[in-house]
Length: 326
Image (cartoon, rainbow, N blue to C red; front, side):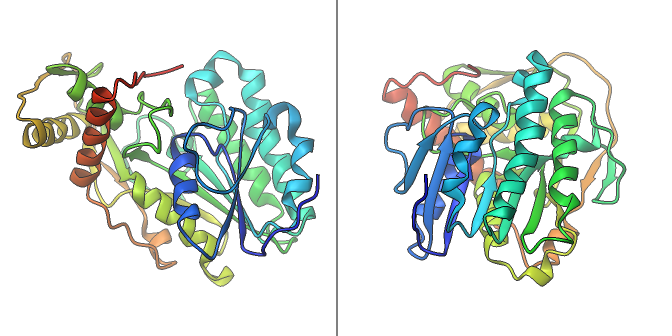
């Protein structure tokens, strides 16, 4: 299919996912942008304004060719999650790596000017510790991370020989409410703790909580994507950036912050339960390179936690069933 559209059109794959829903909401709110969303799911209730097309990138990628005509920027988020990748390695390679490579090629052929790919900090390995910047050697330890690392190479490989500018963002741990209760992403550590705080009288950790992670507010993740949709090409450089928050914390510290915010909002006292375990070295997830492009985070972790707690409480009051995984 071929559709004529305004020049400043952004196509978002994975438009019904945790990041995709919020990114699509933000694009919809900007009058100078037109939105196209794609997902393997049916268009959900109250989805953003904009065009929406349902298909699976793993098996129907050819159907996207016509949609790319007139598109200025592609934001590629669609992928099997960590659990799905572990269950089906072949499909993870097909979707996370193969479809990403083919989509980038199709976008370049269609004249798309910018391609933004959301990768993961997990490409550096697990657990992360010490200083981690874009020069740190990658040691992906699971299928999810391996397939994203391979996709990065395919996407960036031809950036010097094509007019399309490519950006890879290695995202740390996002925290913040999704666009809709329909979004199934409550297995992320920060959001899972917020959901527990609303549904239970205790926060139960599966580890000692002594491991260090970097956290970034979801509103800042959205802002980073739109920043790279607009930033001058000269600032993109080699296109590879860490995307994280200003500080890293132990998981137990995040649990305590969730408990504090839940008490402030609801007046409850949450018990934190965790198994014994060893400590780990601190983490510094460097974002100096992305700062050099002019991007700055603005959200506080406490504010994102409050927003997530409020979202969970309102969903519970409305009878919505929030679940951890599909």
